[in-house]
Length: 312
Image (cartoon, rainbow, N blue to C red; front, side):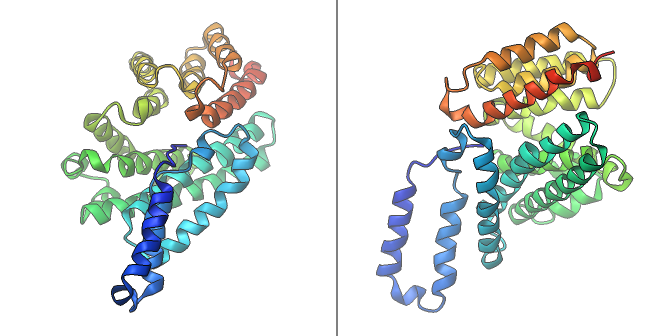
C-alpha cells in the first residue's frame, strides 16, 4: 500500500489556521468546510505506518475503519476526486490482500463452500472499488463512465485520459479485472473483460513506470489469462520490466510470475526457485515494501504447500 506521511502535520495546522482566520467564509457551512479539508488530508497518500508494518492482521483490522471514514466524508463531498481515487485503491488492496487471499487459501485447502462465500464477498468489494474509480473518472472526464460501461469504441474514449488520471485508471482497471476473476460464472460481468484490459493498456502507454512497475506486474497475469501461444513470452517481458522498475524490491512480482507463468508452463523447478527466493528474502531491507513483501511471503508459503495440486 503506498505511503507518504510527510507534510501531514502541516495540512492539519493549515486547517486550524483557516478555520480560525476565515469565520465569515465558513460560517454558512462549517461542517462542509471542515470535512472538505479533512477529505483532502485523508485522501492524500496513505500513512507510511501501513506500508512499513510487518503485521498483516493488524492492518486487516485497521483498514475497514479508515474505509468507512472516507465513505462518510464522501457523502458530504460526492465529487471529491481524491477520496474517489483513494477509495478505489484501498478497497481493491484490502479485498485482494485479505478477502480474496482467504478465498484462495480456502479453495486450496478443499474448503469449497467457504471459498465460494469469500469469493462472492471479494467480488462485491472489487465492484465497489471499481464504481468509485468510475465516479472519479467521470468527475474528471464527463461522459467517461457511460462510454466504458457501453463496452464499445473504447480506444477513442480512452484517448482523453492523461497522465494525471493514472491512479484512477489503474485502480479502476485492477478492481474491474479482479471482480471478473472472482465471478467467472457471471457471464454479464465476464463480457466486460475488454474494458479493464483497454484501461490498463492506456495506463501503460501513459507511463509504463507508474507504481514502480505495477502496470507491468498486472500484465504478467493478464497475458497468461488471455491464452494464446505468445502469452508466456509477453508475460516474461512484463516480468523483467516490473523487476527492473521496482529495483527487485517487490517480492510480489516473483510470486505473480511463479503463480501465473510457471504453473501455466508446468515448470515446477522454476516455481520452486522463485518462491524459495521470496521465502528467503529479507522483508526489512526496504521499509517501503515491508507489508506487501510480508503478504507476498505468506502467499508464497501457501503456493509451495499446495505445489502438488498445481503441477501434474
